[in-house]
Length: 330
Image (cartoon, rainbow, N blue to C red; front, side, top):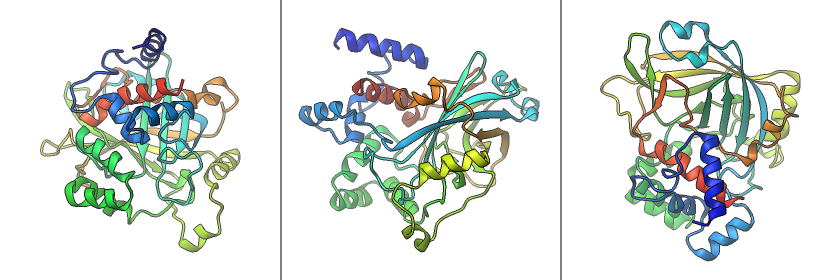
């Protein structure tokens, strides 16, 4: 690795709280570089170098804004997470679409929300999607999915015939309607984390965000009347008049639930605990952290005391891949 790139990698890892060595080599069938190539569609040296020149990235179309997180005071009755004892914690948020096309149409159904909640001494990041269904249970499936979808109909058919998790994902996406706003969408953390309870127990759970203003979807007629770039302006105009809000929940697993496979949905009957509320109002949009949030990464395993990552291979490959992508964009 070139010394300047290694230096940048070390700096990035210090910022994100991640080991430099695990950023590039980890116990998996696929390396960080291979995963990024699959997502970016850069399978060879020529395409990879071309991608670096245009700073190719996933979730290329998006924007940053800001707000605050207000913890639920009653959370301390059950969970031992000191981070949430603060009254209000600043948020940097990025809303985006999936894919590497910065000019993608907003009329698709995919919506993504990433958050950095930076407390007095610790931070908590989220990487979420509006689909609770994930398409891969391991890195081999993830690599296959990202590679095959770029081959068009033929590749998608291969996935349908050969990867049941991909087929289940496609079946769900076909039923997903485009939301009228980023603010009117649910968001899910498909990966599991381990939460420390006051009684000493470790409780596996997953994050979910429920929009306070409710889920509002667009009809086909409404969608056709909108421009292809309506989401950013709608959101920024909205929060000038009224904050966008979500209630953040942890959905806890029971002993029979699969913890380390993000393709497995847990029953709706599982216990949920209100963690607090996300309030996006643009209060810090003129500050450097917000204006430059596109230049960094959102690290889902940068966690405060009382929360640890599960052994989910998809979760534990995210940050190394994000850092690899970050370095290529420099």
